[in-house]
View 1 (cartoon, rainbow, N blue to C red):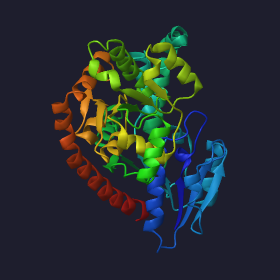
View 2: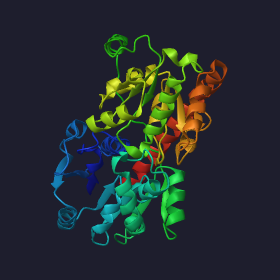
View 3: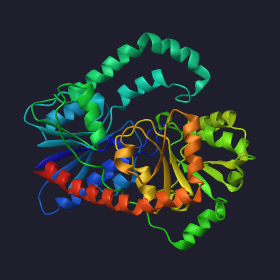
View 4: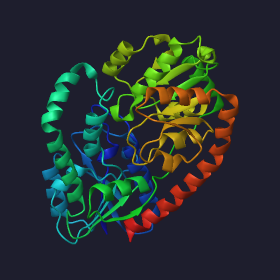
Length: 400
């Protein structure tokens, strides 16, 4: 059997070096390779020549896994129809794929993680502050007023068309939230099932490496809050940053915060410059670009709390990654996050800075902090068990 596996989501682009969707794709690919080793299937990785190279993908090239690069959606369509694969797997079924035409009979298996292109228009309209660099907000508001409904309609139609690329298109999702979202906005959406995103493959580290890294970054004896993906505006980190900065400015009221720092990850130069125009307590914030997987694990393990103010998640890896080390997460109550995190995190309203501040204050109460932390291990075990079970079910769908 000839299988095409789209891996473009795991390739770095100009603005995003790593993302949860890309990690998901690699995890599924690794499991697919391991599951079908005894079967004579040929796996072809579809990669865009417009994006960068992911070393994790390169390590997977072998006799049964080869790569095939494409330059455009039309080129991708031609490759598919000329090679005639038995099935195509889209671990991230991007809405723009609705524009390709695939012959009937070729099985397409697509996983829709969220409706981000459509929903971002909604977010930009309803809660636009801190959603983009705001120096052009006046112009953006005018453009949105004229074009917003047209864009939303176009993006929604793309999501609808994904279900009908050919007569053998099968759609699944990674959370019950996303399934309900698709069924709510698309009346004839035929979502066949939900498979939770599998546990990511993570990097190990020694105690010595851990101590060296914390010492190098000045975090060895400093309690810190951790925020990630600060360069992606739908993650809504700016509101949490403002909340923390306001609390630092009122240190007389919040004396316990006097010893805390904040680590921000995933910022480019423009984002760093923007953040520095919005905060007053710059010495409290350690702003970094992207860090290695090993460094990420060390930060998850040693953070006092991980703060996750995201406005839209199809699944949401980070709180589970923090839970692995027993680290408390303070999370948005939006989208799939409550479904995945249960009662083992502290929740807040992601568009209300006061709500975020109060959630942080609750985490500083020792009794309440321990009450939530005691629930982490149970929730983590439940989620990873379901992730593994769902991964096995997904493999059965992909290979049978």
